Amino acid sequence: MNFTRPTLYPPAIKTPFPKNPRIFHHPSSLLTAQLASLSRKLHPSSLVTPLKSLSKSPSSRLSLRTKCTIADQQLAQPKETGVVIVGAGLAGLAAALRLNSSQIPFLLFEASDSVGGRVRTDSVDGFLLDRGFQIFITAYPEAQKLLDYESLNLQKFYSGALVYYNGGFHRVSDPLRHFWDSLGTITNPIGSITDKVLIGLSRLKAAASSFEDLLVAPESSTRERLLRDGFSSSIIGRFFVPFLGGIFFDAKLDTTSRLYDFVFKSLALGSNTLPSKGIGAIPDQLASRLPDFCLKLNSKVTKLNSDLSTVELENGEVFRGKFGLILGVEEPEAKRLLETEEAALANAKVKPCRSTVCLYFGADDAPIKEPILILNGSGKGIVNNMFFATNVASSYGPKGKTLVSVSLVGSYESWSDEELQNAVREEMGTWFAGSVVKAWNHLRTYRIGFAQPNQIPPTNLRKDPRVGPGVYACGDYRDSATFDGALVSGRRAAEALIEDNGW
Image (cartoon, rainbow, N blue to C red; front, side, top):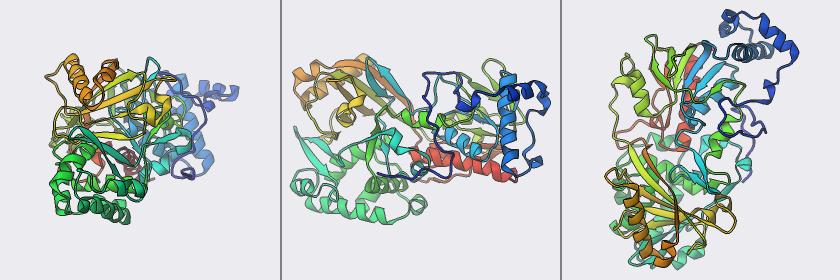
């Protein structure tokens, strides 16, 4: 695919992304002697200038950002900035980039040692392990504006799936991309012939509607929607439950039909992919475009002060956002930070979140060679879906090795890691040769307690980001529970702040 470079945000800067840095450096951080001299002359009280007093000329906006940079160099931890952003997940990063595009100074605080929030990748024994089952759909509209797809080197899945049912694997294919494959599966037991035709018709219908219209359309549960569209209970149970359940982490398909429509349209127009350097390459790319010294890692915000514009860090330091505060953390954490304040989010009811467990194994070979998602359509066992990640992106493992990814829906809190590992091995031994599975080397188990917000009806997938005086919230719980929803909500939070300040 060829995508034009985004115009909404500044262009990506081709700089290497350092491992676990405390501060992300930008080439312009190599200040000249003249700027260094200027910084020594500036008094701390003059380091942040009200935007309304600035000229609208580009030179004035550049001067404002220069002062933010100098402030951060002169005072290792400046006490005041334009905007404080809490959380460097996709939403917080998108908010930061939107503010930066308007030359508004900010500080972005992240509690962990790197950006991404839930969208992270770890390197273990030469394998790339995404933190939970995550795929990137290329047709996401906000992502197309914001990301440089070419540099992500996206590797595609086959457009369809293999379904394990009744002791064998059965193919379900996208009829418009794999017509002949689809014809060959017309009589398999994963649904009726009518079901296969309905998949094609639903694909065409989804592609014809706008994303915005889908997010505000009349809603029901996804299961109710599938039944209303005429799908049989057999294809719902054998295909849609493991397929959509693995995306929504919802085995009952109670999730709103709005999210189903949004994802189905995205799949109809785009491809399921993995970045060659792991899913964490997406937030890494966003972070590489932030200005100097505005991203603070290992900086956990523990509370908001009474004025809702001041945050206190775990180490006791206090920072004030002169123009506002943006909360880009997960819904439970946002509610905790606001629980003592008169803010809209503080009193909101939080639905139980969606959880997942992902187990990774290293192997010498893959029993299936295709870059395809494999679903459990049997209705038995604990595995929901699995795939051989190195079939999709060979960079996910050392040369000659295979990375096995197995996903479960739910938290499995009463199970130990060892019990889960043994149960998964036993179940996979019925799908593939037992001797093959026995040789798999367990790499890591990820338990993702807050994998996604719970978006059962009724929903509002375009929530107002304003949650208190000068306080804005963003995250996928404010929009669609997708990568795209997180990016959109971050931009909308920043734009609401800009509008409220009259800029």
